[in-house]
Each structure stands twice: as C-alpha cells, then as structure tokens.
Length: 76
Image (cartoon, rainbow, N blue to C red):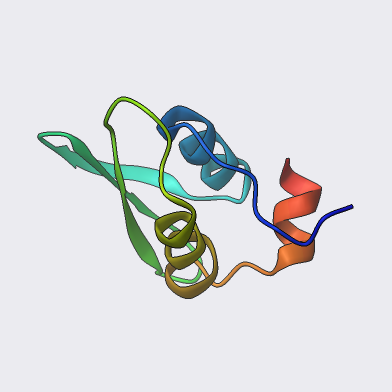
C-alpha cells in the first residue's frame, strides 16, 4: 500500500474525523469546525466543490487532529 494520502472530498474528510471522535462545533459560511470532546483539539474543514488539497488534508489530520497514518488507514 502506498504511504501517500488519498485525496478527500470534504464530506469524506468530515466523515473520517467524525469516526475518529470529532464532533461538529459550528459552521461559519463554507467552513465546518470540529472539536474532539476528550482532547479538546479543534480543526476547520473547508466545504467547497472538488477535493481538499493533500497538503491541507495532511495539516488537518496530523497537525490539527493529532492522528497517525495508522489511525487514518484504520478509519478509511
């Protein structure tokens, strides 16, 4: 399996984060803010047409949410 992240549609990325335990905090225009109730981590997912760019998905999943590559593979 490739080590490279797949491309994500915004709704797929939001679904993955919800499976990881994140809850919708609020939505401001075309951005959805999610918060994890235990860790307190928050992130913002843009809801636009097309895919979320790989570098932004990487920032959301690994930096903002603190997930690992094995966590992401398990949640896919």
